[in-house]
Amino acid sequence: MATRNPDATDTGVAITAGKAPGRTGNRVFSVLSFGAGIFIMIVLALVTIFLFRDSFPAFVADQAQLDEDVSFMRGKSFLSYAAPLIFGTLLSSLIALAVAVPLSIAVALFISHFAPRRLAQGLGYLVDLLAAIPSVVYGLWGFLWLVPLMNPIYQWLTTHLGFIPLFADYQAPAKNIMTASLVLAVMILPIITATVREVFLQTPTLHEEASLALGATRYEMVRQAVLPFARSGIISASMLGLGRALGETMAVLMIMSSGLFINLKILAPGQHQTIAANIASQFREAFGLSREVLLATGLVLFVITFLVNSLARWIIARRAEFSGAN
Image (cartoon, rainbow, N blue to C red; front, side, top):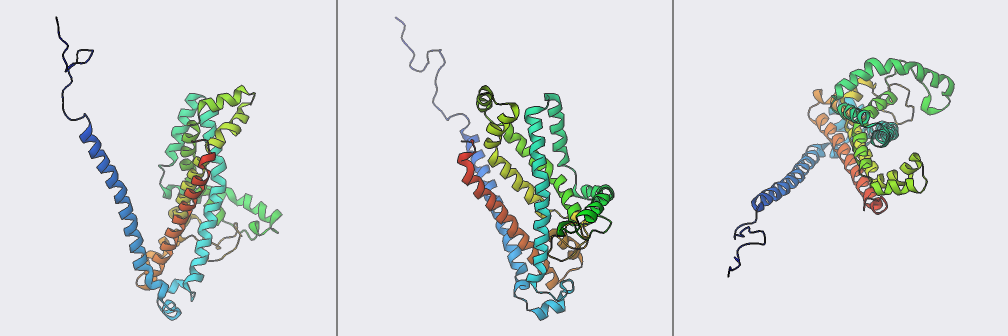
């Protein structure tokens, strides 16, 4: 009578002792992943240490030293010099975000839920391609095309709505914070759109079908199923775009005429400036304490960006349980 081979399965394949397949690959992948995470933290720590170390003299310098060594501060203290730059950075970024986010959500919804497949695929490639355009090209586009285009619009706003501070005191050409913010909105549009589009595509099909089965129209289904599910993703995408807008340099520098004022005259020229554009315009001739003052403003921008991302993470964590992602 035949005996059963204890080293064989029911299919007749022998089982041999040895290492589990892929164990070495898993270990290498784990080490590389852990190392990449640690490397990012080390780089961030080194950047922080560098900024704190090199900008510290600017914070402890007295007014006499600043007046003597830093010509572009025009007799101001560091706080009075940095405050308009902070205001201009936040104002331009918020205007850009207010323009880009609704448009990005609309484009992402069209690509993911309304456009025919071929059109959606081509439009998706086109939106992704916008992210590859260098910022200096956006600056040239804004300076040569958008500035002349916006001139009659701004002129009309000042003529008819000039009693509102937002639209007061416009002077041609349109090299103001509003035009710079519109260029920033176009620059952050592909980042936000691509992220939101992928989040919309992850909406569970059962949620959408259940909404339609209950009699909802296509637009009601988007409002009831897609947007609540994608809420955290929309916030994340918006914060990514805001981070890009906060640190943008060349496009703002090429378009906006600089000024160090704190006001809401978004159409008036020579009123505002951003931290990044100011560093780019002043750093080449800076040395000694002037260089350290510019690094100190860079540290301020670094802190603002860190706080914005921390706020975004807090909002996402707070709303995650209501987003439908779980």
